[in-house]
Amino acid sequence: MQITNMPSGMLGVNTYFVVDETTNKAFIVDPGGWNEKMKDYVMSSGADLEYILLTHGHSDHIMGIPALQQDFPDVKIVACVHETQMLGDPDFNMSRQFGQLTRVHPDITVDDGDTMTIGSLELQFLFTPGHSPGGMCIYIPAWKTCFSGDTLFQQSIGRTDFPGCSFKKLKDSIHTKLWTLPDDTDVYPGHMGPTNIGWEKEHNPFV
Image (cartoon, rainbow, N blue to C red; front, side, top):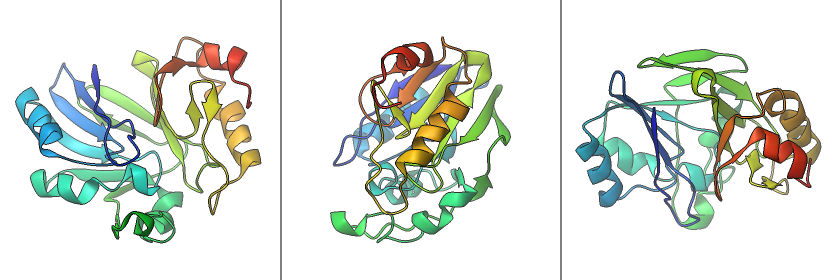
């Protein structure tokens, strides 16, 4: 599995391009922006981009979707079933504040514990509300890899002062879902650098 971080959008969200090298199937996590450089990189990889996976529906994680879909019209959007209201409402997802009315309609909705296979990779979806009503993390057990969105950062957590947020729910999500993963699980967050579960258990001051 190959993971490339392509920071994008006005807030520099970590947009991940993930390729299963066994089958050459690929997916993108949280396209907060989309530009020619990103398009060229994906095209030059020769990978077959099949899915956009969303950890949550805030504007900085979704505003690149319309442009990406123009370049890759067959790509399918996967999001948590509890995030559909936010994704479809530019006021709720706050894209209006950035001068862009982004409405996203997932092709596939998933819930806690659901799995899907992309190439030879089996992905597990973990419902982790708190930063948003339908936030989720994407876990790949075989590679001990977790895309945490804005649920968990390196020695930090996502904001809980937006509409639909809850510090209690976010803390509970981290303790009941992420802390149960192996300590050597690599964590790729929506902002800042990568970390791992064991380090965050010991050093994250928020939880």
